[in-house]
Amino acid sequence: MGDCHLVVQKRGAADAVLPSKLTNILAVGGNAVITAEAHTELGQLCETFPGIAVCVEPESVEALVAGIRQALLLPKHNTVAREYAERTLDKENVLRQFINDIRG
Image (cartoon, rainbow, N blue to C red; front, side, top):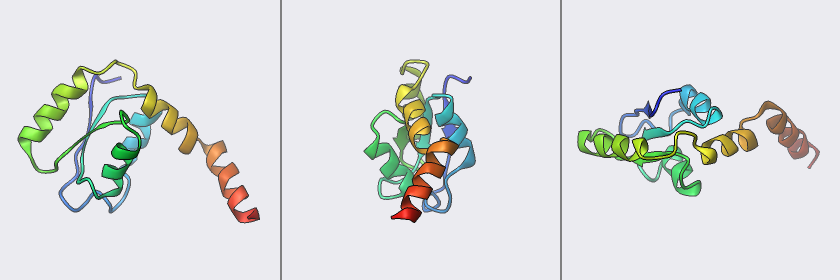
């Protein structure tokens, strides 16, 4: 696993789709630096689950460098990311929640 994973989004693009590589990063408990504005879904993910990733301003080299430096200081295994993936991305949990939602 890499020391730091980059999920680079252009300004205004962070709500288009959840980057598929982020799912894998979270599943292995990786440390990610995500470029996203605070009001986007990715920005809200980082705010709602502190420690899940380092969120920095998009299209800013200085912010990206600072985010990478911050991520490299984190413990190698990101338990917040891993627990989030187990709870919200695990196939069985997703299907169970879907069935519960259908049943009302």
